[in-house]
Amino acid sequence: MRPTVGVVVFPGSNCDRDADYSFEYLGADTKFLWHLETDLDGIDVIVLPGGFAYGDYLRTGAMAAYSPVMDSVRRFAAAGKPVIGICNGFQVLCEAGLLPGALRRNSGLRFRCMPVRIRVETLESPFTSGGMWPGQVLTIPIAHFDGSYYAGDETLEELLAERRIAFRYCDAEGELTPESNPNGSRLHIAGILNPERNVLGMMPHPERAVDPAVGGTDGRLILNSLLYSLQPAET
Image (cartoon, rainbow, N blue to C red; front, top):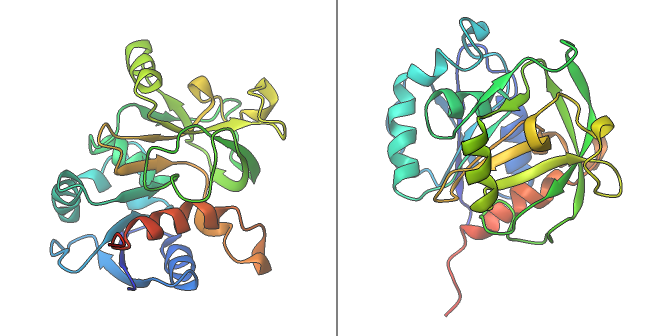
């Protein structure tokens, strides 16, 4: 079966085509969803892609969180279906209340665009359960200015206790060194899950690490894990 991936397009999105190409490359069907659409019938996965939704006015993701499509995305997630927000999409998920915390300006106030290493922290999600192991180090590119994850101590303790940190920035050996944290995120957080574990927000771009012609292929592990989770269980 070929799942259908809905790629939401906001005014200012610029990674929607990357997401479309990557999921098609991995064997899924895709459908672009303009931010005014509310009908998600026939969609198996929602992707909120990277970019600069609404020009990042007010705060990154703040205006996009109020687009008509987001009410449908909330219902989609509440029904247990998978949602992944990448970079600007992560920011939108936080602003929309689907994930806790916020993304702030990078430490050093510099735009960071480069490959980084992230460590797999949990296999308890559709995004990480297939073909990965705890502590595995992946190389995935980033491209952001507002990518420093921030949450209060109580929220961070909750994320740790519930194993809802999906990925953390690390070095080649999997160590959480200051030099390996490209934006100053608290606890080196690169991606988190909601309590039900079907919503993932992450700053690195797995859709840009799928085709070997344009770089590495570690992003396949995340996207393939998600697609594999949608296949019906064998009886």
